[in-house]
Structures are given as C-alpha cells and as structure tokens.
Length: 169
Image (tube, rainbow, N blue to C red; front, side, top):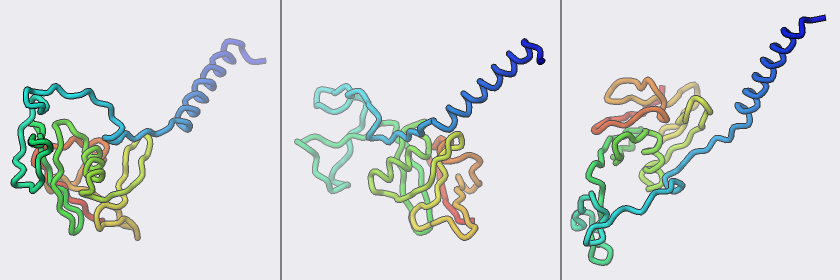
C-alpha cells in the first residue's frame, strides 16, 4: 500500500491540473468592441462641447455641424497609415491604443474590412484584410515602419506616424 502522505499529494496535484484544464477549455473568449465599452458622459464646456477637445472645421469635411455646433475631435488624437494590397487608410487613435482595437474601430466606421480568428492566450490572427487573403501556403504578415512585426495585432501598441504594411508571404 502507498504512503498516505504521498497519495494525498498526488491527489492534490491531479485536482489542480483538472481545474486548470477545466478553465482553459471552458473559458469564454470575449472581444470588446467600442460599442460595448461603457464610458462616462464627458464634461461639457459653456458651448456644450466636450471639455478638452478641439473644434473641427466642417467646411473641409463637407458635413454640416449639428445644431450650430462644430464636431469635436480629441486633442491627443494620433494617426498611423495602414497599407494592405491596394488599400491605403489612415487610422486615427488615442495614445496607448492596441492595433487590433484601432482595426475594430476602422471596421465599424466602414474604413476597412478584415477577418481572422482569436486564439486564447495568443491573440487575434488576421487572415483577410482589404484585398489580401491568406491561403495556398501564404500567410498575412504585417510590417511596422518597414520591419516585420514581432508581436501580434492584439499586443502591438500603435505609435504616432506608424506605417503598417500587410504582405502575403
């Protein structure tokens, strides 16, 4: 008969691994889109414009201001360029924005089309973007300012002026 102390330790180790396996396989992956994020109402200045924002000239955009007010954009908005095949878009984002989140915002604004799969623990893997589609032993790889990315889109924090190019390789 086995030593009771050793049997007790083996049982605890087995239970621990069972619990870990249970959580890994039953974890529901939740992807938050900008429309699902709850935010507090911004503080408004005397004109009813969110405080800390710049006013945008509507003559350049061709869209009339609502109720005599001008549209606002955050002061610290930054931009990056995304190239994918024949597509060339400008992403606007706030500091510390993850590339995947900016892609979701651009998709929701109908600026870009992309699809892929989310792998728990690894992140989102883009399989189609713009006119580029992975397949036939070719994968989508993205380059940041001419250098191959070392992290996935779910882990890369955009920087002002980034030029991100997608290639099939």
